[in-house]
Amino acid sequence: MAELVTIARPYAEAVFRLAKEQGKLGQWSDLLGQLSAIAGNAEVAACLGNPNLTTAKKADLVVSLLGGAVKCNEGDVVNFIHALADNERLGVLPEVAAFFESLKDTEEGVKEAVVYSAFPLDDAQRQKLLTELEAHFTTRLSAEIKLDPELIGGVRVVVGDQVLDASVRGKLAAMATALRT
Image (cartoon, rainbow, N blue to C red; front, side, top):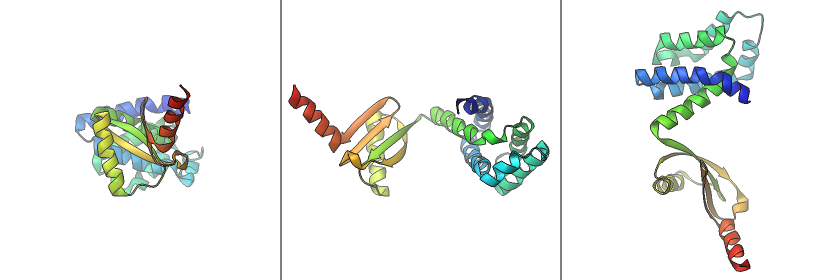
């Protein structure tokens, strides 16, 4: 897996620089998300791995599957896809997209957060929690919610190397530690 990231990094950095210069980070982010989905499709991946297809045909296939999504900057998008195809790198599009997103988040001051919750959260609860967490961590957050019934109640939040444990299980563990001393 690390090898794919190593291969994808220069492509992601080049697209990021281009998107930043053009002021189109959001559009390129959407486009790379679509390209990632296309490359991740099993049938498309089989075509991209077919040695009987030329690199030009593989690139044309990906461009055609994008359809009208190429509006961001058509020439740059097509050139990017052809560059990947010429170097037989269309298969790393998911990694390119992921690395681009991390560069974009860093540029925009957004950090990834993983929120472990004992129970499912509705949209209102999620938004309220995200607002409170952004105030606590003093940064914008992009949150992924994961269910963990072992928490009993509450949430456990991981942002980078910081952990905020507001779960019943965490409080019980802290109480048990305090009683032992």
